[in-house]
Length: 276
Image (cartoon, rainbow, N blue to C red; front, top):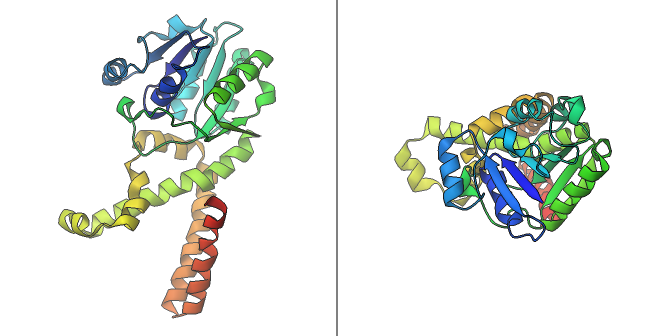
């Protein structure tokens, strides 16, 4: 199987590291608009060579691991891929991407969202085993061709991922609460502290809690700007509901209603009965 990966950062680089070990993969090549990423990807042996878009249109698999807006633009330039080619996108939102897939290649296309990652980006962020035992959500899969469905399932099965299936609209709302809103909060926490504290105090006093809460603020602003734009309505709903929770807790503290503060925290703690 010949595989091309467009976007050689954390997600694309990590999938390259894992797939190159598979017996069914004969070749992995890459495309990235960033010249330094191209050099780094070759140095790290993430891909065998850097190619152009025209060179991959008869490949078995094309994986799009780039910001959401870039995925939509790239799909327009892939309308003449071979009939057997499977195009898999790894974008964090799905509804608008699917709506913009050119009709000519809808059967070629598989919408996937691996629910994994770190706050780092670029080729040096690539991690072997990043996808192992993680969840991948496949959206509107029945609209993809049979060959493409089989190919995508084979790839994610080889990565030891847990497959979930849902509609794109449903996925985007869930992602807004579970993935996108935490990034909104992390960026906001980081900015709040930066505006109130100097560098020395931050270095001296930032302990585990602050580091954990602000870790996601290290993520790529370009990528997350795209995600927030593409999933704007769901992200705003999530922010509004979070603001309601924060206002309720603030009110209890202002009014010295410590039993209610305790109750709210105890309810929040139940989340880890699910996660742990």
